[in-house]
Length: 589
Image (cartoon, rainbow, N blue to C red; front, side):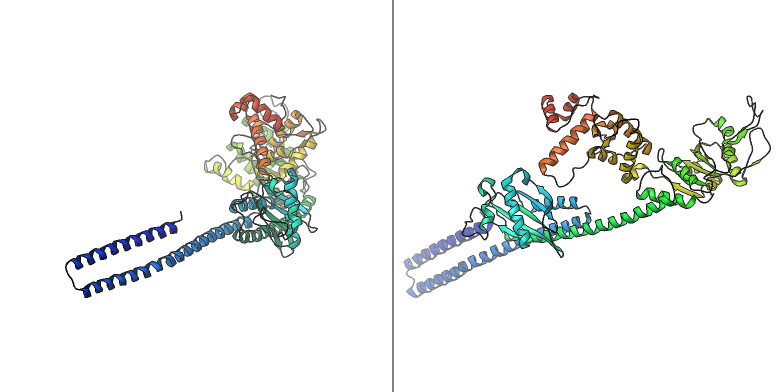
């Protein structure tokens, strides 16, 4: 029972009790006075006093109902204001959400989720249309019109009426409508409302200055809770926010496409000026790296390249050499960590006959071999202090001395060094000469790790597929496998990616590389299951999530029996699930 009704009954009871008590008191007083022989004038005064009290009491009682009615009215208004405030807060939060969401599918997926929850709809969808009013996209929740022709016919009819009229369509109670009272009887007679169980529908257009972009459709199955005027007002405001979000998304998309075209043109220009066909990719980070390399290539200044193992430091050094005036001269690479320290000096500087036991004839070192060209010193941080001092003299004087010789030899070479170590930290620890570092670091270039070049992963993967196609069966990569490749952190960088692609080419069971063909470590316990694309029904999303989650578990376990145990599913039921989800048997198990 509402609080106002309870209060009304309580006050009425209390007032009634008061009348009974006062009446009883007056009657007793009158009886006592009469028995005592009190004169009649006194009794008359007492009677007038009782009548005055009763009159005041009745006047007071008459004010209670209006006051309670007013209170009840104000309370309802307050509740309405509170609901309007809450909905304004939802609209405000949605506006912030939509303005920050630049991807259209994600925006509309979030929008339909918000509006179904807020308006307590049982089902709904957002449609987008083209200039010919043909449906381009549908983002549905709790319904799949393709699976129910009657639902499709009803919703399509409502959508068409909304789009053609460019105004809302709403019916609070479909059961109560008769063919005589329907504004458009043909609209509702095209389908069986009873079989569908739909009690009320609401549909508003998505209107922009350029025309109708689409519509939002909602329905309810509860006849006791039809859509109301407040729901319509909210949906109209919400639709305007969707339109603003779509327009922002469209503007951002146009700007991104423009910037992408400009970046592609700049990259194409850069590729023409700075030839590096072995370096694959077209992303921003790679562009910045190649742009800096192109500027330094024509000169002969020393360069130090910083970057993780497998990130392409030697390829970049070769590209710098090939785009320099020394391109026709040798490019000599040496990995300082791959040669023992006691042999590295003779390998770099060469030696004369008799310089040490076994040196029967003179041999030029790598530096002499690179004379006129470029010497690439990989893992420069592995040089000992003696070789660091000798390298510094080469950079300062342009001269070398072979082991066992006291005669300096003039050389003209460019030195490009590379390391994956923290040279600044080594300098602080006294493990690397600061003066040598600054001699090498005329220009410093960093090769970005592959995890920062996600936009290049697809292009790199395709390159490796083509590279190995001559020796192996040509393959393609499935969308799910591609998604996993792009979500992986790639600690081994490009080198690791090539090995993964080669492994998948060899092990793939079909012409397409699937997620199950990738190494298990690519999807670890720390790696989230790739997100479900927006625009799917709840059932479709659940099925897709089940499939991906089961595939990940299968890759992390030794057998299907173990996977079923980890997932807490009966083995027989698990096999049925695999068949339903289209997960084929893996012969590698």
